[in-house]
Image (cartoon, rainbow, N blue to C red):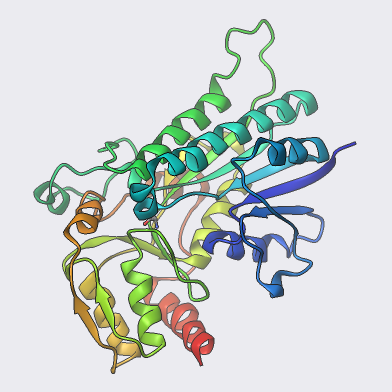
Length: 336
Ligand code: AKB
């Protein structure tokens, strides 16, 4: 008999590590974590970690044979900047592995007649604002506006949202008997800031990079201009959003894809915040026009009212409190 378990892909990534910390508190859960990289030593015993590549069919076949998944947190992804340098890899990892995992979830839902919950981190990168004038004049973006991504990463996330909704609501629609379907749910994350890990390969990275450089006493050359603005949240809120959405009764959901956010910041706002905590910080602006164009195509702010109404989403702390109590405290501890 396959063992009942929860699957976390991209487990050694920023969100993955934070999520496994939280899931490991639920002693009844068997957590299977998968990543190309090992988990840091302190994760010993928190999950059964498998080092492997999701693009490899054998790995997926082994997982499907050995485990019966109640939930799949599919976090593995090639982020926006890396995806621009290798769009085909991004397609294979971000899109093909998502379809393969949705197929496993669909088969196991049909066999067990219990919906496998599929939790998917999408992104503000699904949005594409036509120009800066529009970006700086429109109110916070709701889920059905400007979904016109300008990056391979954004396209892959939007496609996976659509396909996830398809597997949840239309899969096997021509069958005589409609099988039990997957319970797909997604959040569109803003830029995420962790005190314990530094992002790699993204384009919202200027915020966390600036903070982590200052905490190490290193100078930082910011690849976007001071006025460049997008929404952000701190890592504990990102994990909270995934767990809150997973726990929401399915009847409370008016949609399957939700914006979530905490605050909207420009690079200059980050500089002010950094200089508060690290007055010696050396920050220069050396914009990379091509990377900045990607960030300029993303909304300055997003509207997460649907998540607040449907499943009582809200950040655990306001930005200032979270900055002091979560980020500053831990980032100083980390580098001291
Ligand atoms: C990226 O920059 O690629 C990600 C994102 C905004 O989804 N952090």
